[in-house]
Amino acid sequence: MPDAQLRQLDSLNDLLPALAAAADEMETNPEAWRQVWKDPRMRAVSFAGVPEGINPYPFREAGLGPDCGHALHLALVERLSRGAASAMMALPASALSTRAVLRLGTAEQITHFFQPFAEGEAWTFFGVTEPAVGSDAGQVRSVLQPHGAGWRLSGCKTLIGGATLARRGLVLAREQQTGVLRLVMIAQAADGTRFRARKLAAAGLMGAGISELQFDGFEAGPGDILAAGDRRPVMLTLSDVFEKHRPMVGAMALGTGRAMLDRLQQHRLLQGFDDLVRDHAALLGRMIRLGRQADHGPLPIHAVSQFKRQATALADAIRLRIARRAPDLILQDPRSRRLWRDAAAFEYMEGTSAIHRLNAYRDYLSGDVLNDLAV
Image (tube, rainbow, N blue to C red):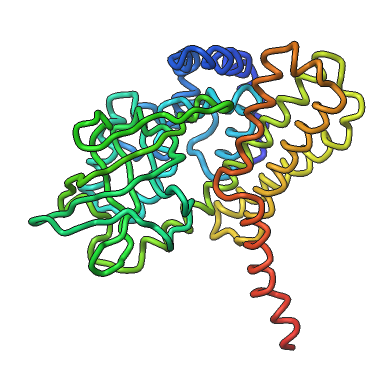
């Protein structure tokens, strides 16, 4: 990504007040995201990744460059999260599903999955996490049972973003007879006739629309299974999807942390936070380097896990210090209170810190350290 594109990020600063205002209003009005959706730049950023020919808002028309590589996408997410990650997450978008469908789907499946996006407003969901087992794919309990030429899907998914609005989605399930993991394409809204979705109670990040899904014998055709003839690609694809998305979560955490620091500055309360301002700048540089690395090849697991862990730790550190040094700001300023609550959500998104410490440790031991010892 050229440095010139990074410098153009300042042109998005005029969007930040509108994003913040939309997120404030979304506490009571779930449709407030429409205030920012009307801006063509927000539509182009939200639909980044939707295939050409289907995408009505091509990124090249946003004025930020000819295409949206991973480094630029991370930088955009961080900058816009300084307005409000909650409002950004509420916007129509293809989110996690995009990479999996493009990697595993046939041309017909890809066209079918993304067809709603041609109409201008569409959401998708990515159903992996389950009650009791979390996002541990090896413990998935949702099952696929043979039914005629197709399948019946049963199971529960929880902590799934945007599912109540989505018209397309992916669900991870296990073939009952063989135990093979499959990604099932869901090509309809959760209207209660074939499966149910309900929004879960939340105190922060209201725009994420965190939901629970229930499937009771949902009928899926043979064409609704991605990579149906291959027993292996699902786990590999899941790893790729999560490793590419985890820096996005870190970017949102960084942007939200910066928004809290900016709010302190507006109220002339930033004194005593200098070290956290420097930490933000350092992690921002690390994020861009990770993005540039992703633009040219695979990302090392330990680097992704360390960045996500440290970015969310920074947001938590800012929250804790505000509570200790400027508690009245949280109590008296509604926007600061919303940011303070929103910032707490990133710790559990795409893996908790304990998981990322373990990822980093395992990757570290399996890499250069053991090679050096062998020599």
